[in-house]
Length: 194
Image (cartoon, rainbow, N blue to C red; front, side, top):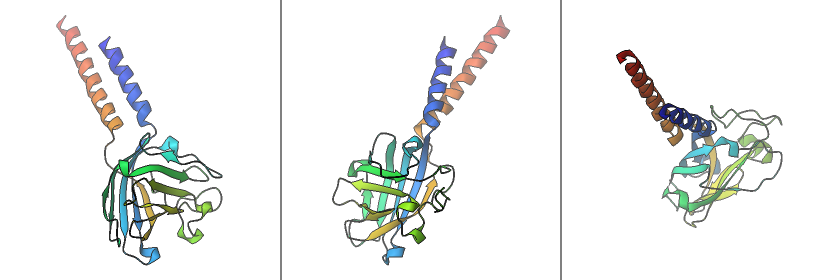
């Protein structure tokens, strides 16, 4: 019975981990002529990232999109660390499937544009990723792939890459694997002793 429960727990953990991933996103003000920058680490259920051909509503932060850390520096104002409570929603748009195991910025989409390309002026053909704050001191989305800090500096996404912070679902799978191994060893020991 315990082995069946452990197998069920492992299956649930694997199913929930299938679409979950840690991403590190960086923003820079260089293309706007300022020194502001930001780095955000997010735990994201990639099934929330649809392949879009048009406008879609924003999604709430917190369910399937968690902010692990978010830091702004070099801005005229609004520097510091922000938490999930500082942001209310996010937006993601792509026009063809992206490979979430690799750097997203620069991947070719089916419409002939690269995801997040500056050459397209961050316009809709290049997709979009944005955060929208509920705290006036936090940066907020102001254009495609662009945030504006509380100090008025614009910063654009320069990298959107898979991170290396282990996620809770990964830990659950690892623990379930140890449990299954231990159960198998106990069962084997009991058979040998009999």
